[in-house]
Amino acid sequence: MIHAAGTTAAAGLAAVCLGAGTTFASPMGQSAGAGLRTFIDGAMVDPAKVVEWERRRLAVAAARMRKDYTGMLVGELDSLLARLEVAVDDIPAARAALARARVLIGPDGLRELLAGELVASEAAARTGIAASGGRWQYSITEVASDRGTAEGFVEWLDRARVNNDRAVWTDACPDHYIIATLPDGRQEVIEVTGGAMLASQFFIDYTDTARVMVPSDPAFPLAVSGVASLADGFVIGGVRHQFRNEPGGGFRCQLKVAFPAALPELYIAEHRWHLACEFGNWIAAYLG
Image (cartoon, rainbow, N blue to C red; front, side, top):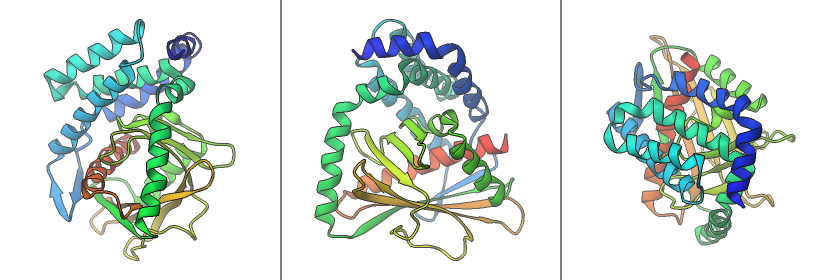
């Protein structure tokens, strides 16, 4: 039972792992908009809108995890949902509560909780690829920081990936459920992408850059790129995130994700906010 998996995780991992999730939630609890500028469709967006998007997704994630859990987690998740109905000011506490819930449920519990969604989303991904006939569309967001460097941020991200720092990766967005580095170097991702209603599982290979279908921009010299595949190697998309230092100081990120062309535009548009949220929070944590 899922509840049993969550209880086992709570007994075995809470003392050790809860701290990791809460520690990362603290720097992200600062305003991710401070010193950051986010651009969607080429226009700068109000930082409050990125926060509002995260607030909504925090409530959705809490409701998803609550539906099959009882006991100690219900109080945690009910409290999270109640806080989010009151004020956006509770975002730091909400992030920490969701991080605690993920740890208490544990990776096995989360996979069991989302199993039905993962089966359905895999079938949908295969159908979407077939309907797209090899064509792709791109979700693109840019985030600029007044501080830090492109090299420093890329190194920080890579260190978190190599060290399998799950709190860094997972806590950056409410739609992240599991992001883990596997022994072969690939990254397992279980998340809700874009405007999807269901969670999906895929694996990103950052060494497979030759097959990345996302166009490169020569104005951004640093890149983190990879192909996204299902467990059997079936390619469903890819990422090409590029970075550059700005002349007046700070750095800029150009974030691109490829989706099958047959997907609705709403799906692509919504993922731009997903990118704004996760990278805004990653940059805030990098800057400390």
